[in-house]
View 1 (cartoon, rainbow, N blue to C red):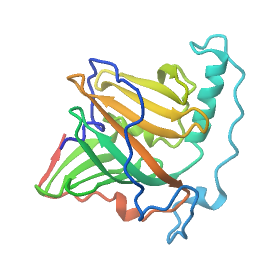
View 2: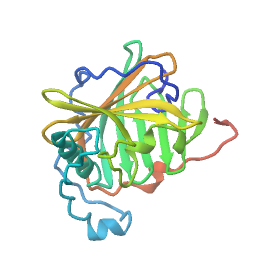
View 3: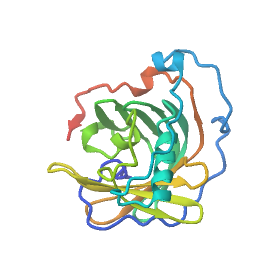
Length: 246
């Protein structure tokens, strides 16, 4: 069971957006959206003073490759994406051959995330802000990647400007969704990440990455909540003799 959605680096075919992947029944162990639980540990000064007020939509630029309404939509997406430090919820992953897995995730920006797959998959994916570890609990092995070389860094940026054409290469609008393409153009990392947002709420719903063979892997998220302070131990990577650096 590969987790190629994290590490596709060379893209030879565009990612198809289409409809969101089918979602399973809600997990009773994850609180519904909007329900807040008491946090046991603070997670930085920004939690004490809160986020700044959302930015207003910018004055449309005539030099932008996007239309004026698209620039407003991109600004709203950026504002929503930058409005939270922490998020948790459930995910469903559809692999390139139709294989499906699911689990729970926790984000603590900047840079930290934990994916825990449900049985029969025995994987944990952890980012501590510098590195990303894929821990195979069945084989008792661990692969370590630089966060800077994975698409996860866009999801975990503290502040990202999705109105910038240097980041967003393309934008597609459908009845209920907005899809943004982010293309890697560096010498060491090349690839394409598609982020899919709800057109009304501007919330992130899904992302798609294509591997070097042009095979798509998609991840849909749901039952999400924001504002909780997660346990820092969730993002701790332990280096063992079975760790392979990539």
